[in-house]
Length: 346
Image (cartoon, rainbow, N blue to C red; front, side):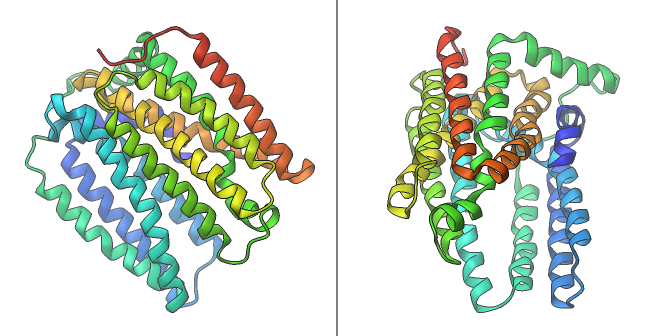
């Protein structure tokens, strides 16, 4: 995630000046190559930690450009009047894959070896490459190519900050990503140390979060045209705060499973709804840059919060760290409710 942290606010400026079809296709090619490299290194028993770090860094650079390009493509493919429904369904496919993908990988890993997982992963990108080529919409740049790159970057940042709704969304999303997603990185520790589960524990707790994600996307899709996005975001931050505090007291899977479903649902409602609003509020010529701010808040700034809370978990215990995360999330929720600003796209 380091490349997204550094390049996140600026990548959208390049995306707005590039042909999104070419960008999508070549990014899938690069992601496929890195997966196949890991498969080869694993198969030949040559894989080392430094190899994985380099490949992860390359994937991070590719993702800086692929994610805003993919998000911005939706508005070029789907009619504007259908965007409020299309964006949650796009999120549904992504989060459904988060549930199904690890399940398939677990079966492959148990029956074969890790290199088979990466081989299948690499081959699967062929479908995405053909999908990018098959899009019939015009994905050429809508930005003013005569503008200097510095001006394009500043324009995107300035618009996000000056648009009151986007500024509020960005600040809320950034604070939530930094303080409230810490538990996702602690899934193995939650499964092993708190819930005393065996090897299958990580799969179980991840599956619970995935169920919550799918429920959230059903909710956001059903309410997409009801004008309650601001309420959904504030309510979900509140429910996430409750979920984090409850999770800190979990000692068995029967108690933790519904709490993890609640957390998974809350997270996806927040980020999927923010994603929808960023796309609906931003003008077409600025969409890539504005979406980059959303991605930066989630994937660029958010992961940094793992380290201070991880240090606290190591020195004071995971339950204490979860409680601190929950209390800070309560404060974020209070700030969200205290703001009377309408977050709806008009």
